[in-house]
Length: 530
Ligand code: ADP
Image (cartoon, rainbow, N blue to C red; front, side, top):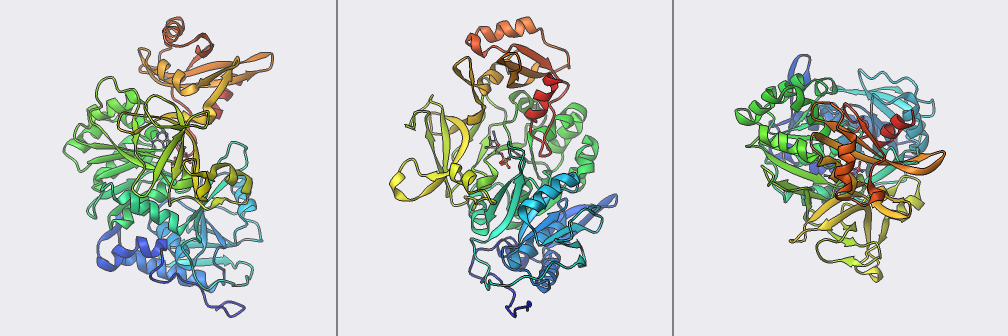
């Protein structure tokens, strides 16, 4: 009971709730492993039954704090069984958790706290954060439940039920404005996505799925949700092991991992330093599938991986946090010669998309570039405290604007193949004007990438104080040597109009990455500025 005597809220058993959905396997087979995780120098298994017990204990303790449905809880952690139990406990009592990284600087966490106004900050027993303002309660979580350090301020409980439209979590992404943007995800959206994705039949309860994304990146929430909803086993890869190819692969091997979920950049150092060990994992080890998402896999790198892993299936997950994801597409292994772009296929079961051309017309056939509008039950509730940003991307269905139905305007450009499948062409906002001409940076990148020896390319338009903005290409090369700039420019000239020719070519050892492992374009442009 809370101060005003209202009972803690729960979701009715018949109602979609993440806790109920993800722990269904616990009911059927409590002894099955839910999580296999690092413990000291070895591994520890947490069963579904144990995960449920930990979840219940924490849910009870959260209840006792008197918070109301919808109150925010910062969950600062790396993925492990206790983090999962804590997030399932939040789902049980209707608290919205906000994942945060233990590696984030204080200032970044404080910006999120200022925006989300959480009731409570949770970190693991080992957590080192000590800058949480007094207005926010603090507690630590571990295998034995919560240790409350500072109780949250008392709340009025107005809610009696956790509904499917209540918020499960809010992920804060960097946002180009510098202000973090909070994506508010409801229970029903996440579950609708997971149900649709299950139709792809990627895993069964026997699979062991390695999760490599940081917990605050929703890719990890997909890993957790997708794995547990199949009654399979989640294998979180600790950051410290991820950064060392040999330890990373050793962890996969020891845990008997069958599927690895990772952004493409995770594989770069592995292929470079431990290609033989990787190859063994696919050949004589347990690895049978690699799922990548977050950005396009550079084609050269993908082909190299496939050569090392001829028996492993590759899967391309495409989409944005606002809808969890959009499509899950098999990648042929090996990729046929001449393929220049990966297919992002068709939207997952239960969702559908439409391409809209620059003139607002619906794109019906191959060869025309359009923006993807996604019709999906996994639509987010909106951006936290930002109705204007929400209105800009939750828009009337372009196929039937009178219907009252809304869709997600992705900001992603694509073209259609012969079978209606889509090919990703970059962000609509990477469409730039150069001397009055509309340019797709992705088209330039594609061409530069085809130059002999180039293994990766990023094109950027950089402002200049003393004149027109300039087009720059950043490249990585197979041997780290600079390509012959004159030849590279001539190679571009042979296929691209003059205004699309890079005026500066910069070779980098490797592309700088964002905390989520995607190419950090802002850092690249700073290279030129300095
Ligand atoms: P996610 O968490 O799914 O990576 P973000 O919201 O961080 O989502 O970024 C979404 C954007 O990342 C998409 O709109 C798209 O531009 C890009 N993206 C995601 N997955 C892919 C993919 N498989 N191929 C190409 N681009 C992708």
